[in-house]
Length: 229
Image (cartoon, rainbow, N blue to C red; front, top):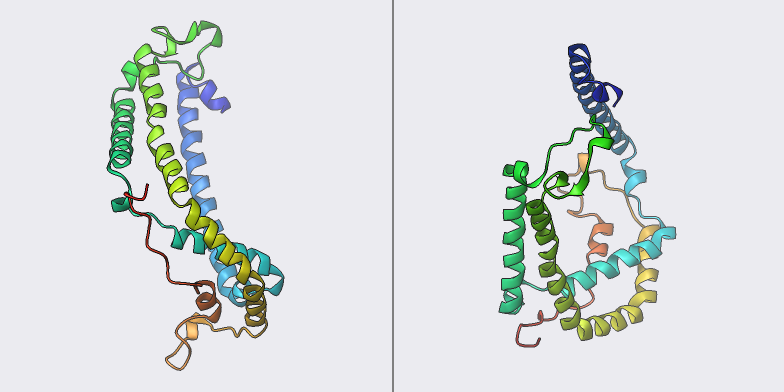
């Protein structure tokens, strides 16, 4: 940061700042490689301990199972969404993409130059023709945030449409919670480790814990249709 602030002082500082930038990127890349190697090493040497289901984590496992069941059973696909919301959502996405392209290719028209090393006292305002953001830039940035209305409307519609189904599913999940936890704890206590590195045809194809975690209580109901809304 200090080198970057002084880079406009002289040619030496400019080159020093560039050198520090390249050095920082290289060091960061090396650290990422070391971190990835350390994680992989721990996973290989302690795979059994890292994948073993613990009975004391039954509440967390139940919350994951519950969230997955809600997501699976109340999934809404694109054809089930009303046409008006489809058009609003797609239109807002398209406008946001165009605005992002405009900010990338036409940033000189939207934002006025102001370097980090510039004196803050020379900044007249944050917006306007002599500010950080031009009037056109304010309109583009504001329009981008207005287009967030598309995802918001879709989310509200999905919540309202699936409200009754969600309540029924939560009631069903609450009834099965005690039995599910009891079965899961029993599975965790009798769990047998299967090393994927030495798996052969005589061993089961899937880990018992994985099969248990994706078990469903009922076939998923038909997704809500656009006419139901």
